Each structure stands twice: as C-alpha cells, then as structure tokens.
Length: 128
Image 1 (cartoon, rainbow, N blue to C red):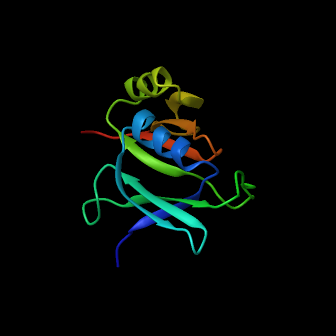
Image 2 (cartoon, one colour):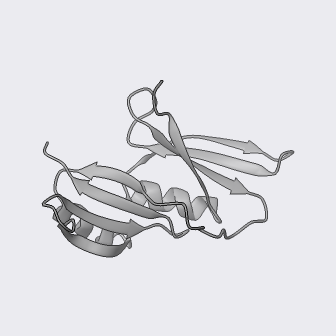
Image 3 (cartoon, rainbow, N blue to C red):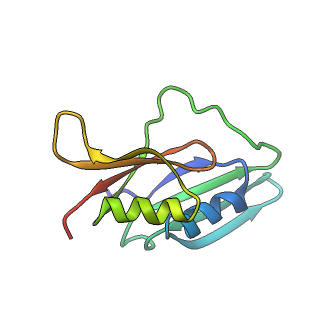
C-alpha cells in the first residue's frame, strides 16, 4: 500500500486552485467536472502519483463553506528553508498563523499556514 491523496472540500474551486498553485507553488495536475453528480475535482501537488501524494480539492455545487470539526488536524509539507518559504508565502498573500520556530519541547523548525477555507498546513524544515 502507498499514500495516494488527501481530499479537502472547498467552498470556491478557483480560489483554492489559485492558493495552492500561486501561493504554495503546486501544479494543477488534473480536473474533473461531474455536473450530474453536482461536484468538481481538482488535483494539485508538487508531482503526480506515483512520485508524490496529491491533494484532491472537491467542490460540491452550491456549498461555499464547511465546518472544520474537531478531528481534522493539518496537512504537512517539508521545506528546505522555513524562513524563506514563509516569506515567499506571505509575499504572495498567504496567511502565516504560526511564525517559524522550534516545536515546543524540541528543535524541529515548524510554521503553520491557513488556506482560504481554513485548513491548516504545517511546514517542517527538512535537510536537503
């Protein structure tokens, strides 16, 4: 088995595609529109399967907002330079909700971003 994708329900497909491609630097990999079933899909990522897992953005016709619930946590992305990554994201209009710094009780550098629908994205600095 291997990890294929994570699905996020979004309230505005174009706004979400713009955020993940322009702000987060992902590629729009493919889209599907299912008017009879009243939903659209967009897959974004840094590479397609099988190289990397993808994010599946799902827009259900007529639903522009979702409750986050208490069980969802975040999506995590590895970056080489967390400070530079946060500055690039901020310069493109991204919302940094936790500035870069060490995780409580440890030395790993992390930061958090919130996407336009309120989903949290953790950045974790990784060695190249």
